Length: 456
Image (cartoon, rainbow, N blue to C red; front, side):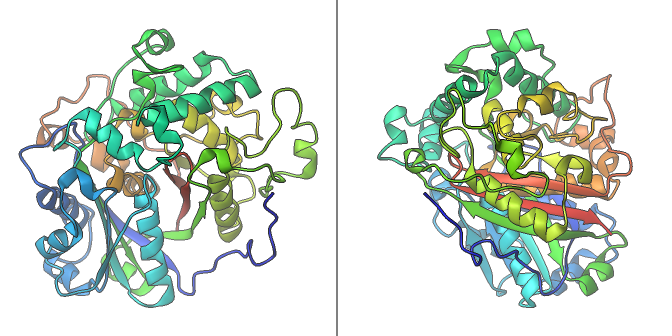
């Protein structure tokens, strides 16, 4: 049983404020043969520097950069070690220092955390975070096995080298413990694929009903194809600065008030029972009847201690008392519908055992109390793994800067990517959004980051 000491729960502090000033994306596709990874990251960087209303020219921006962080999940896909070195050179940042980060599906979030630490410590004052993934040079079957190797090969790999199978076991356990019908999970897929219809960056948008989701081809019982994330190719860029440089570059930078990480065992079977780590909106009374019926352990097989740890630190760091009330926009790592509803509980949107209430209440929808995954998420829009956590924060940044329409509505953006804007296009800008959060998640919950951004 894990028991924390006071040092373990120390709340992090930034010695200097950290700001995000601009973001850029490519669109995301199953295959992108016409552009290599260097070209894709350049496209995302150009959008960040040239289309975000920065007050300097691209060359002036380049001269301000003094450290870079790169985010790529797997060298396997592109068969290129030190790919960051090629991209760093291609983007014009040699001979500046850089680091490449790898923490599975949370690589994007961990890369942003690394950049925050560089700025907050004073080591650097202008840091582009660049993420990408090249997942189209191998077959889907081989790609699935590469991704699945981020779980324990001595335990989970025996289930078929496929993450859907790993999460299907969690789904079964979660449904048993909490009496959650499949229809509840299907609502998440319907929501996220619908929001993906309203963005030119998305890979797998679609207008579906709950019945469509349930009747779709089964990948691993109970998860259907439409409940699973997509393998993607694409890139994302987020530019972080200290306060001085942020205002030299932008009139509306957004402050990163918290960026924190948690981890847990790679092997899910090693996750031992422990007291529930309480978030600011919870008390001992919240869980007085939690351990009853089919529920015996926490975190057990159906919760993510890493997510709870990251949220605990970030909420205290940013002064979040109640996430549903204090946040205006949220991006979760919806690799599968089950991981999304698990995360609702891990980050305190509902107490453990009651996650279904967040989606069924309507609070997770646009114009609800806490709109979630308006980007389309991983299920509807993308999972180019190294870019994913950065993509989430770019979407949050644009919401807080009131620029969602600028980067999703123009016909020119749709035609740039060879797409047709839908006739029923909907502007998903959250009115008056001031504070947002993104959860970046790896493996079966081995690494998670929680990042909170606030409009200044």
